[in-house]
Amino acid sequence: MDKRLFLTVFASVFLAEIGDKTQLATMAFASGTTSRWTVFAASAAALVLAAGIGVLFGDLVARIVSPRVLTTAAGVAFLLIGGWMIWRASYATA
Image (cartoon, rainbow, N blue to C red):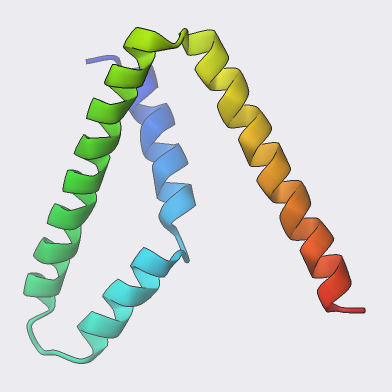
């Protein structure tokens, strides 16, 4: 196993998931039940399945499109989304 890749992916996904809708939904389910381990297991299984689908889809796309193009496209998409969110926020406060 590539430890550097593992740590990079772990840190990226962990930081991306903190405070997102998935975590908020999981907190809501956990607050409404005494079976917190069931909520944990179901949430973890759902995240593993979603990640698995992402890996499979990523592998299929990588067979068609070069990794350099994918990396560039992902970076541009994140920048555009970030810019759009800042633009919307500046008009929402006006």
